[in-house]
Length: 178
Image (cartoon, rainbow, N blue to C red):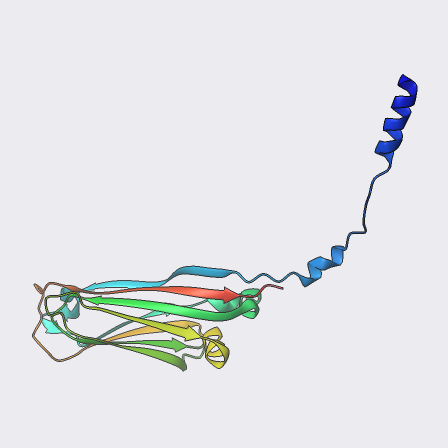
């Protein structure tokens, strides 16, 4: 009886169900990740707009923007949303212009912010810039971003002036990986 039971169990275990596996399904795989990251930031104190006792009405900086050197990332990118937040606690109004430049330093696109002067209450300016289609192609050709800050006429500032002009920004990028 033990032999019969052993043979029966062994024969049941030796038969199994299986189906053909289709490993070509991996070719149809499509991932659509969304990535959020910091873009740029600055914090300029009011007294930094004064050099040698004189107001500097124009200030700026140039940043390398080498995000699109990687061709895989460049080809996978379908959309980018840039979010900007500017907080002004200086008693002067400003215009801030972000200029996107190509490798030849030619302007491709610009974003202008009108920032009112501080009047004793929270003074935050926000903007979201969406890059898709032709606008995304301009962004993909960007190698540098110029930040140009223009101080508008108003109350005089000096080395003892208080307040700051702060920018925070982030990018949300949408990719399609196939």
